[in-house]
Length: 145
Image (cartoon, rainbow, N blue to C red; front, side, top):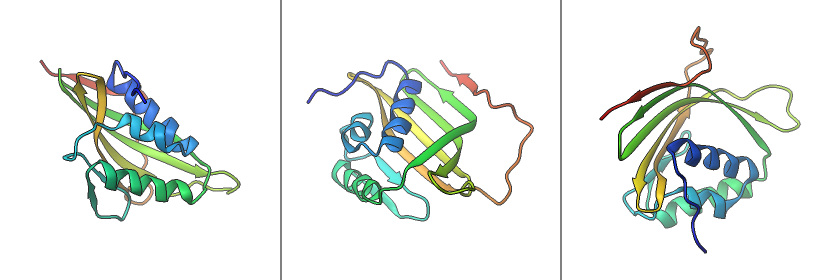
């Protein structure tokens, strides 16, 4: 199976959240690099390193069967020629439940590879209680050369 080509880190991030919402393990792993040095930290969890362990962690999450919706806000982006770091707040809701879950803060790191941009780090943790901001929902982007 040939992996998709993500022309930008934003394309890879959009595919990551789409795979998460659809609970599509193949699409999720398509976003990730094929590197055993990559890692993932799920909220409240330990650091998981390597392709197979990360795949298994997502398989277990998707097996839970919850229909999740994500709204990203307050994106902060640092972008170099070979690496991009996205820090976002994830507002998560579960289908059929009347209220939103506690927001998460996620750091997503993407690396440019010969096959386009790929995720190498996802680290999510619960945001401190009642996080509010006057910052608009537009991403702040820094490009370093």
